[in-house]
View 1 (cartoon, protein in one colour):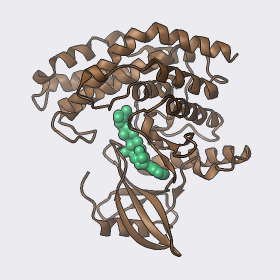
View 2 (cartoon, protein in one colour):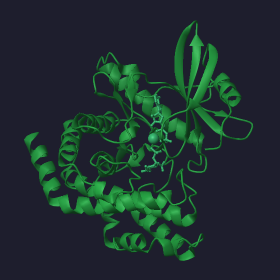
View 3 (tube, protein in one colour):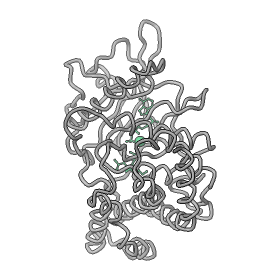
Length: 374
Ligand code: ADP
Ligand code: GN1
Ligand code: MG
């Protein structure tokens, strides 16, 4: 993250329809893509927080169209939540604040694109899963997110990153970068490269089922890592799904899959001690129960039968993306040290192996849980 001075945050805050006196602002959260800040404003003596984000325009080529998706999704969520009389509706979806001129984002003198959201208070996102309540709640919330968006009116949502979960395209890109080896790093990642190359015959499974009409396109979140859902600090219920930048057409197993990747192991995504990459069966079961509690009504049998595979595929895919980024010189994900992406890749590789060992047991559990809900 390029450092952002507090005067800049103050100026950017002033460009949004935010009233009151600016107090301060600081980097916030642990996302890998955008630059996120929490700013504090005094409104008639009451401190109010906002989230300001500098959208990564290397990753998102058209932030204005992206914000159009976000507004449509948030409006629909609010409409649906209000219609059920939810007393906490305003905390249950993001609310973007327009600029003073009424635009969804602000473009600063350097061409950087900013947006502002109401800060959702008394709720936090977890980087590492702590208990099965969190697993159940996170998964229930992402299932509900899909459910509430099944009838979104209007055109197909804009694809903010084309081919985001097109694993075969990502596989080809990995091979291209590997062949070019621009940083001369391939020799330091031989075992990882061989591992990711060896899955060629599995990378297109979900897209093949989709093109055969067996798995439908839906509006999915596509980045369902655990810290992209905020959980109430008092009730421990999931409050709000956040990070809607990749919410767009996708397949249900992608969303369940990234939950499996990020919520079944009680270790960090960049854990170096691979003996700590142990899949907690109870976390998986809570995820399955939570997701099916909200998604069971609309899931087709093929979607349901591929949820567990989604976990392996999403873990494989992001592991390969970390490896590709390592080979390319760390141009996509934020990194904290030289081989950070390689370390992340190794963790994902280990998790793919662990998930393969549990595949049959997990498939059976999903099947039985879904049958019990019929
Ligand atoms: P990234 O795409 O970089 O992951 P996110 O949109 O996920 O960015 O935001 C980064 C972090 O900021 C989140 O993990 C969460 O902790 C926090 N955050 C984002 N939006 C809000 C919000 N509206 N209210 C409270 N916290 C938020
Ligand atoms: C990124 O934005 P964040 O940190 O929630 C990435 C995901 C990866 C994830 C790995 C737009 O998610 O696809 O799975 O890192 N988001 C984008 O932690 O590429
Ligand atoms: Mg995030």
